[in-house]
Picture 1: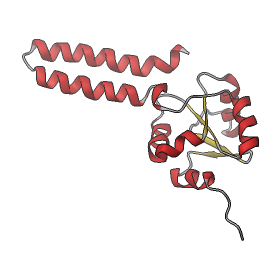
Picture 2 (picture 1 turned 30 degrees about the horizontal axis):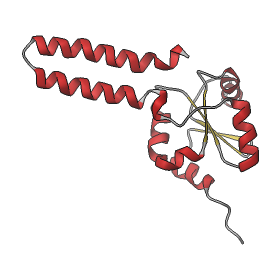
Picture 3 (picture 1 turned 90 degrees about the horizontal axis):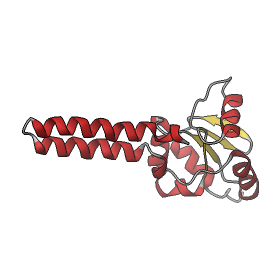
Length: 147
């Protein structure tokens, strides 16, 4: 649980120290800008920016019922952030599993990636896809068209 907050907290702490140095140097505007940028970075890389994570077993169960993809991710991953941003509001329709919070989720990712914890790994219909294109993931949310 603590591990998911390391990057955001370090970003804010380092930004605060650097901002204090800039204020002492007589540059309060630059200090404010730096603090705002690093706070935004911390927010985007925190679990708060992503839809609520659930456990891998619950995600598999829900996916079996509604057919929606399961996304395995971790905080601080730029590719996960890219997927989340590019999906926009559609991201809330996916089942998100934070592999740093769920050991079963991390095991699923390692099994799909030859022992590596490469994320995002998106599971659609029981088949894993590593770092897929966000447009493709969005297509998986669309109901199949009638022939």
